Image 1 (cartoon, rainbow, N blue to C red):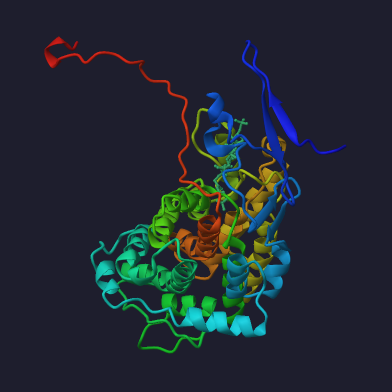
Image 2: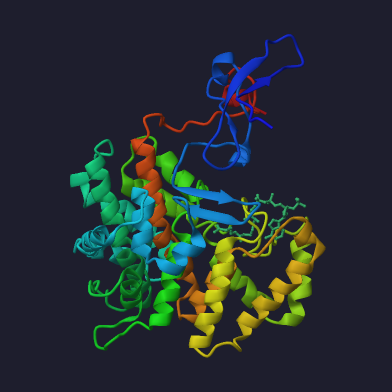
Length: 432
Ligand code: ACO
């Protein structure tokens, strides 16, 4: 069957039909180009962007039915197996995997930017000690625009690259320091002899008075978490970064907005919410009552770590993380961990339950990544901060792609207005 190149909208009154072009990408669904509809006085209604492509992108592709995720065409399984996080970040930003010389150069550049301006430590100190790391990250990342404004011209490709390098290099330091501040321990300066994942673990777990050597199995598991979360097409936080950036806002402000969006429990907050839910369930014997609540429409409770807007089969990242989960628990001798056992039982029951099966609700990556991070000694409050760290690679690649796109416009959705029609002002003494 040949692909359509045009679509026609007809109306059930005497309005003239409107013909619209149909666009095809390299993979995925065709889209109807509705950009000219407004000229006909017609707009579309699509809350949650259920059927709307908001941009063109050549970075990440998801086939939700097949459970496929590609970064620049490469399957996530191959990248997670063979690459480190900086190679994947380079791929997302530049479109190709780096060769040896490019990898060395890129790593050197990122390493050169890992420290924070000394004055930034005062910004951390302005927060309450018990502030959530995500709240601190939103503030500190936003404040980078007050420190690194020498290269913030978003219309200058070179400036965009410098800002992107700064963000990628500094975000682990910011995330680790937001934890250290919570704990009341001294901030650890980055150690540039370590790789990206090891350096983050060092800044989180080391203290100045003791030697710290990252465990290689845990460091590799952590690297996989970063790779799996690095980008995910036009999700809520990435769309937020694009929308904020579409007005010409600087990259630090745009990424701070992305972090804010990621914090929500329906998005990046799900791994933290999953662990809290597992603790609340507490025992295998109580799974049934929570499953019942998840199915009850009058109860707002949802099974955290299940379901995904795009995947209607197993999230491929979840399959990789499930394997990593076993590796980490074996390394740490935690295979008998009660929360892990509870999670495996919950997964089994949910995968067999008609409600979840018919709605294609499978465990997502956050279901397992939370268990891995908990086993590694990472506190729940840091889970989403680590997700933000990883997703920074995708955000800056997507932000740069948008700015380089000659077709990009300020994001300005329309609305279906349902309020009062025009009415006259009523003085206060006449109001009922
Ligand atoms: N538990 C119980 N029921 C669920 C769940 C869940 N976790 N997720 C979806 N459903 C049900 C809905 O109630 C709905 O049922 P209905 O058709 O009878 O009304 C149906 O499945 C479809 O759900 P929608 O809400 O339409 O799916 P949507 O695509 O809007 O939501 C989302 C996706 C937000 C991820 C949702 O599945 C959810 O809230 N999951 C839990 C939170 C979570 O794990 N988020 C992480 C996402 S992955 C990430 O950000 C990396």
